[in-house]
Length: 269
Image 1 (cartoon, rainbow, N blue to C red):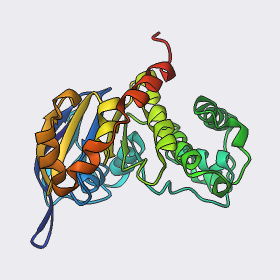
Image 2: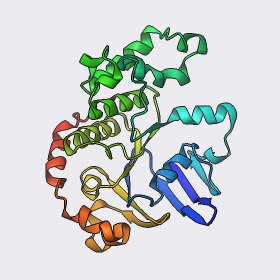
Image 3: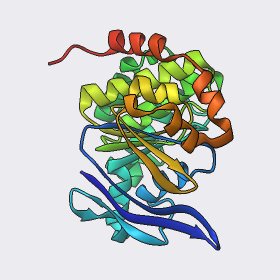
Image 4: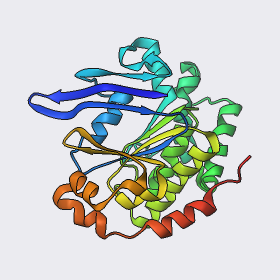
């Protein structure tokens, strides 16, 4: 279980995240929604320890993540994979090598730096690419791929870390609706197939309704909503999005996306 207790991050007088408390069960698919500047990205970066909290604590299965240092912090970042809006791939490397970077936490430096990956690592990376329909692009340069394909490569890289939780920070913000759907389907499939906890920041209310079993809403750094997607009423959306509420309420992508999601899920074991 992920436990967030009174977590805050202040920049001078600005409270980017203000006293957030949450508990998230293992295997959950949780969306964090809110307008730009609500504190969503800062929250995820504090969980991964890319940003240090001003106050509060983060725990995973009882381990105080916010107190880790050295090798303990290194191991946490392997267990807690991060996916970013801008993909963070190395464009000049091929797709397979970009995915293999996710194995750095499991590989000795003398193998990793000259890219002397083991056969087992290569097979794992290729399997991840096959799962997300990217195997034909394994030898392509990463910067030759479309934005949606690059984000799926980033998801594959996170998957081969063998994480227990994936934090996805606005993974579809720079994508068109079709590619956003493909990327969200990929995250949902990984969550369902491997039982990996997924915490994803989203701006779109419809994506949250279509994919997330639980939705957490933030406004001005504070937690203002926590519940099922169906409980996201117009009034709740207006509290979350303010003047931007009409933009998220006017979109009507839910039925199309939700229908495609059901068909994309692997059969239950």
